[in-house]
Length: 182
Ligand SMILES: CC(C)(COP(=O)(O)OP(=O)(O)OC[C@H]1O[C@@H](n2cnc3c(N)ncnc32)[C@H](O)[C@@H]1OP(=O)(O)O)[C@@H](O)C(=O)NCCC(=O)NCCS
Image (cartoon, rainbow, N blue to C red):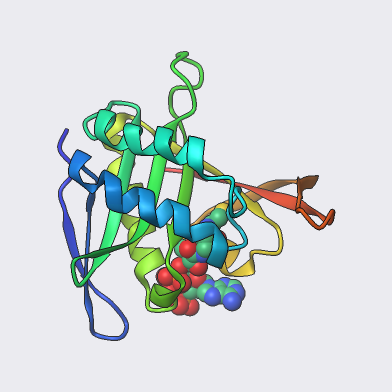
């Protein structure tokens, strides 16, 4: 089923567009993925860890733009791609195919005006189009901004995985595991 694009008005009065990413978005999506770890310390990958994976992910943008297992939406401000939100089926087996793995990133310059919330609403709304009715995520426990947003969208914490992340400076950090049943 086709996922429609959405025009949203942000808290600062600006307009943003949220729409499925397409093959032609791959170069800008790759640039966003490569730049993001330097300014967003809560992403899984650290700066310099992007090359192989990001190329793979950008291939996925083209291959999966009409996939039954994957939704990837981009957020655009003044025509520029500033954020991405993804929902990916956990697996093909019948027992788990209702579950989707969620991830989001947004350029820092676009934070705090409701765009993160709009991106989440859009992907939650789109989940039933690929028959996903449970959204799951994992988040570094110090990422209070993201956890605040997830709670606002109805997610609940079901567990904490101790020492799930180890930064290059050797410090470890717990991971908060959250779920939303639609
Ligand atoms: C998480 C992220 C998407 C939020 O985007 P955003 O556009 O700033 O979020 P919004 O402006 O829509 O804020 C939504 C809600 O978050 C919550 N929130 C914001 N800042 C918060 C804070 N410091 N503490 C707790 N909750 C907070 C509030 O509930 C807010 O709603 P309100 O403004 O109506 O009160 C964005 O910060 C981001 O991309 N971070 C880096 C990448 C990342 O951490 N990804 C998640 C990895 S699991």
